[in-house]
Length: 555
Image (tube, rainbow, N blue to C red; front, side, top):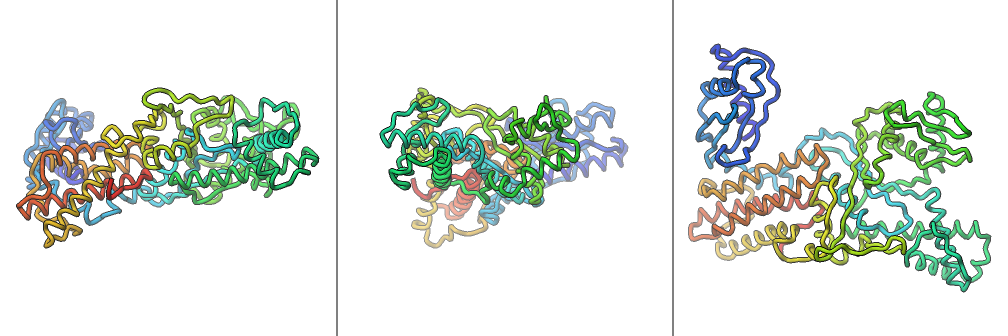
């Protein structure tokens, strides 16, 4: 209905100009919004307020002139001027009935659009170093990145999801050293375990695997070579577990990209050479520095240290240059909040290679506070103990974990209560929404049994004029808002917009179902209500799909 209202207002304003009541001129884009209160109508526009500067008259006068020139519309009950000059439209129930048909006809594509115009977008997320298991923070980043990719794709973008494997550099060497020292301990040697090495039982398990694989004589190997063997094996095994844990969490990637491949191909050095040739990289104190300050960073950054070793920044420059060369129009990186200070330097690199700043976006995901029954879950990072993503999925399930991770904006901290996530009650958000889908499945099955003559799997609603109850119209209005919420979520890259919408739709369904029977003695009314709840079921499913959450038929 929004586009219909917009066209009506535009046409009426032209007529008011022709009648001499308004003057001609460019008017800023008007907004058509759903008012916060039912007393303000179904839809409202700020046309009069945004036109006031051109018209040089009070917005209420402009609104009255527009209303006076509006053509009658069967779907509109009345039009009022409110407040400083809002034009409020009160719609008849018949105005909302076509929404049910639209949902049933579009099915799993309801809410999809060409908003993105096939723009090629890469979403890189998780990208955890293969030095240990994924923890709860990685889980939130995984849920956010995966949902952002789903939503963008649904909104008409061409999306590729990617994991960047940090399989090169100091952290991999440290991993190998950690495994090597634990291996020596297993072999009976007394070891002073370095403070900067990785701790945790998983290191001991990896050491045991290497010792079993290589045999007892392995401890006599040259230490540097032995550490290399430990590093390669451990990183491979950890990455294998990361892949498994992410798949179990419902996350798959279109591409896994190795950092080491950038060095093996000479890509890192090539990028540095290009920047040197362009005067973007200079030498100082024996090191090579990138002029990131020229692009808004607080200071220039080192790409090659005085000892000749490249920094992480050097490989990140090469990696992002490679991304754009693959043809992506926009690159989105999902990082932990502790990487905030890294944004400007990487943005500088992107701009140095000739890309606009807005072609590079970073989503910073804030921390998760893990609770159990309202009390913090104790963890000791010093001892290498932490709650892994696998622990969370094993305890509460994939659906509850993903839904809870996406329940708030990623730029806010999140309290994740494990006990709440396991409850089978309305206190558990995922249960509250999934129950609607399962409940409607039961209603449809019962309708088929009681009315075998009905085709409850139809694609077009019937007898929708029977839907006049306030709760029915509110439910349809909520369904009508789904495409707009998808577009809003895609435009802002905020998946929690879909979470909030699903909670609103579930609440509208519960309010309806608690007051009205779907299956009645009136066959036509039953058909209309079955159409309505079937439409609700489809939209619940579509919304859950975007968040990577299942839509169960039974609970």
